[in-house]
Amino acid sequence: MAKDISDRLLAIVDGLPLRPGMRVLEIGCGPGAMAREMARRIGDGKVVAIDRSARAIELARSGSAPEMAAGALEFRQSAAEDFTLEPGEAPFDIAVAVRVGALDGRHPQAGVKARAAIGRVLTPDGKTVRRHKRAHGGRIP
Image (tube, rainbow, N blue to C red; front, side, top):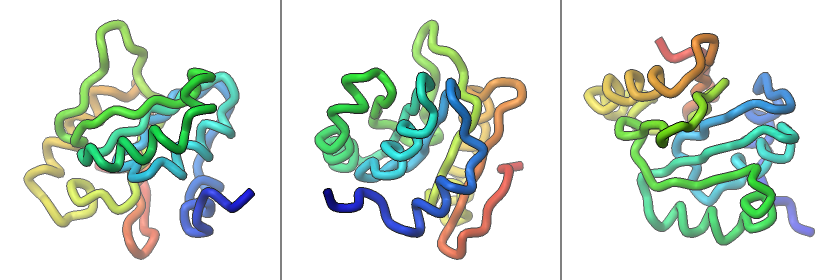
């Protein structure tokens, strides 16, 4: 079987504090490779992956049937700044974003709204990890 994830994304996933049972939000999931890898690592947890692009969500869903059928992975079309929890949905333990324009400084006004929206969907101890082109990262202020 061909490798599903790039070395760069694999290194990012390797560096995340993932553990079984976590709820993970991936922002800007693209075709879903990183979301699938995180879902494999968190056992009975769940990854919800979002992207503003309908095409990206279509690609992600088409490549993720086993993880979705198992309930470990869900894809939703949403911009980071518009994302909210569904009624009765539990908050997330961690939010992860790689090269997302609203969070890496390319779109500052959207970034203000996105950080607020993300803060509202995390547990009180929840963390946000972001990476951009040069693999800088850390908690979003």
